[in-house]
Image 1: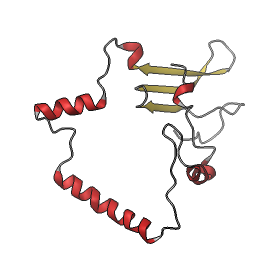
Image 2: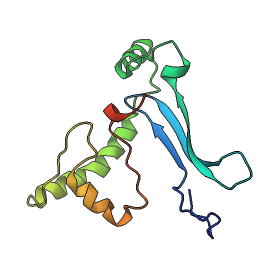
Image 3: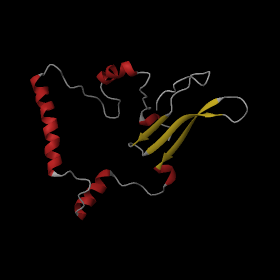
Length: 142
């Protein structure tokens, strides 16, 4: 979402956010400021959530369940074609060769479930006021 061209409220308000979460839970959230009912101009942050868990009793199949069932049924929808695989390697191979050529520039590794290597934080630092980090999955309220 973009900033407004001029300030229409006396207080600074946080930007609206559309958050789409794929793992560990499928969720779509819209966070925005809402006017509190009444004559005064007061805003309150609100959140609209949609989660599969809250709306459906059926469980979603695991990713590999769907993949294996599709393979057994001959459905290639989720599989890459040979030309796609070849093109992917044409993109990736120069990167792998560059890592071999410059071994002093080590690839940064990070723990599963984290926000990534420390280098990513440094990379995003100039955009700190624009970048929004979600809480880790264990801290989510759902």
